[in-house]
Image (cartoon, rainbow, N blue to C red):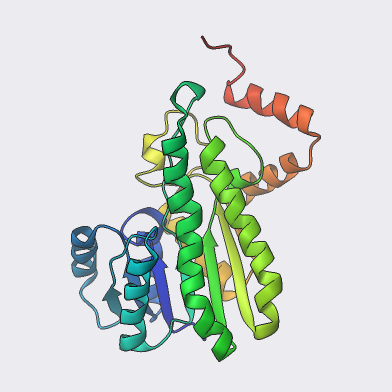
Length: 257
């Protein structure tokens, strides 16, 4: 992590992204911040102090053209970033009665395609340089299916698989790849949830977990430990047992309609 002087972070103005931006600045890094809402991004940067170590590069991660323009701005200012963190994402709770192709496509475009767009823009310079760190923010929900998360879980599972596979292809060039899989973190997204969220933590605490993991170039950063290791254990259960247990835990076994 000591070599990651310049970091590009998407989804920077709220939740985990906001907490990470503050942590990176505290650690003396140059941080390029990307969010879709340029006005909100400008306000956020001003609140952080318009430091010379900050660069606002607004872009919609679903647009390769906008991301390309943002990346060029970073290169012109500081050179190619040492670390790219694809953090932009969203969530829509969708019971069966509200499940639509349009909502699923929105989640796929932002959470999966948007993350891949971000990482691939930074990849060529890293390969040429022979160093760099590619990071994707997923979720513990990527491990196995959960109620109300058919599309969300699929996007995070897809991102996890993408990062795991990419690691094989780039590590021989000297690159690092990290998958971040948080449990419940208090953010504007989780504030929408109406169901219990065990062991939920504040965004600043999540940023601490992530910072320590990135310093060690971990392949996966998952937290909080008690919850994430429980999820890993559930992942190896025979599926019928897992299905029955999750239905009981979440209360989703009640018949509807």
